[in-house]
Image (cartoon, rainbow, N blue to C red; front, top):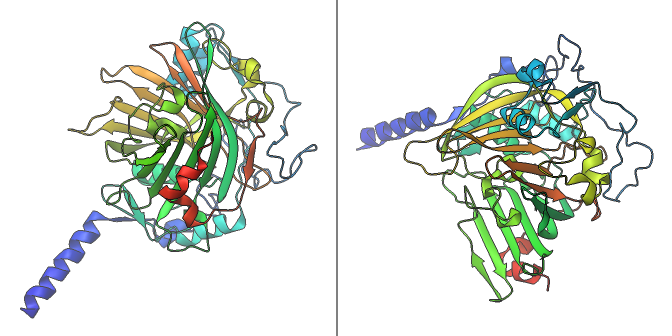
Length: 449
């Protein structure tokens, strides 16, 4: 009996070891902080000198920054584009464009990329850098890529070996511990008509990065309280995502003032149309990707140098809504593009799984791990949606920030802009709320009407 128990235990251990994948070896980890930054980006610039070597990021706020204001002035306001890419010149830059960017250049003569000098402005607090180096060998991924363990307050996979590992770095990207904003979402139809789809108060927290909570099993939680448009004022939404997505589902609730009750909302995930953008994108399109990875196979394709929106302080913190939201696309005068190295991850829909997208390609910034572009393909294999996130590092935290993003529906010739805060006070870092405030009961009180 005892022998049988020992044998069973051994088999369980072997199976568990086979099901889980560990991080890098100690020898590989020695590259962090030497040839690679502590979070895994290449220290060196590129051969053409169009991407500079990493020099520690931007840590000194520019003149005019008022601490606590939520608005971050553009430190590069005086720069001029070094290159302009339009439909006539895109062929020569095709290797450095996403398929989504090519589609927009092809469809709209007014669309262009103003490419500015590359600045590697992303930086992190010392504890993020040190923890990532120390825990690079301990992070473990399991449940077909949907769960991680053995890591806390660190990027789990600074040297990813699979698409799942790279996407976990994106899901856990460091934005600070907690932050709030009053935001607006817009949709722009094919005729150029602008509609406010949602306005509200957003609170987000990343308990995973709280060093005082080493046993936290939640990596992200978000609460939205809607103030507009009038038909949605008073509604509220809360989402909590676990680290162990493989065995624990996303928890989500909605408060509807007409019913005066909080309801569990299990459908707020995957390809459910996102009401915050009037259905132009899906719930898992938020931040270009969020939530569970269990409907797709994620493959790590490799690295590329491409043009992505970067250091977009003007668009995020200074632009007027009326100036930014042009017909067919955002106003090119207000969007700054830079050449950066990105990790490319391709996701293909699993056999037997359902989603409106059959294939997705994500482009993750090597310095921040944030997804800055995505190409989404429909069931026929045609490019359907082009997504872009507007990287704007918060030099005062310090932390990257890419929560303003857009999705272009190429078939309907519409687009949505999510997370516009320039006219509502910007984004402020805050202290994390108590766990009690993240309960379903507390959600009802957050509705405003």
